[in-house]
Image (tube, rainbow, N blue to C red; front, side, top):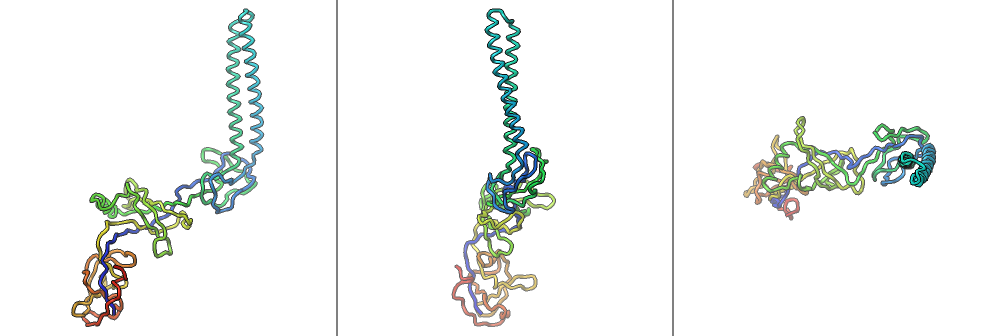
Length: 350
């Protein structure tokens, strides 16, 4: 069997939480005008860019309204010109008392009314042209689009109050949010570390996180904390937290689960051994130590987290102890052994 002394190095504890990913931005695409759908201009599930055309609604009814509005505007402008000439004529005649001041006032009021009608006609034309633009439904943001919910030839309802027909939805993917719930004890621990100046608060500092996806054995994505809720949930005793995670390869989708690792302590000196050197004795965790007389002793230990493949030992070992790291299945308490010293310290790191 092989023995090695524990590795002594500075480590930092990480706490793990189960998180669910959500899009930073999500939008439901709805038409602002109603009509028959002429075409669908995107592929289901594709990445779309802001401004990309998604749907085309039949614009002909709105073009007809715009043509009518143009005619009404021309009529209003003609009436303004007529009112101007009538007023100019009245101003000339009033100097010779050919018309009364009352007539001039009436013509001045008629000009003002003509101007008001012109403004109304201009507004009607702008609204008609806007409706024509709204027949081309564009992507409001860059992201991955869902499937199309309305096919060409179907009638859709348009509205600005949210009652219009749902056409599809778009979610952003990079970056992406991951939400997780922190228990009260962990929150109190972090608060204590912050008060002692040993760990920055996630409310003021973008503390780093590491994310491990389902099926992975080590973190594959990194991010930072950007939100802690202002109260604990009284029904669960947890604090809703959020991190923003880089997703440049677009491998994470909203709704996925992941394991979120967050720095849980200040740096400290620790002893570490290979995790395979730890055995279980009923409810205890033990390691086998070779004493100076080369007899085997079962030493109860208090375990910490894994750090780069090695297990932190919080209590039960000393730096000079010789720990059996290979062949523990042959170890017998009290038996005399002829141990071989590993060529490198436990785990191969120092």
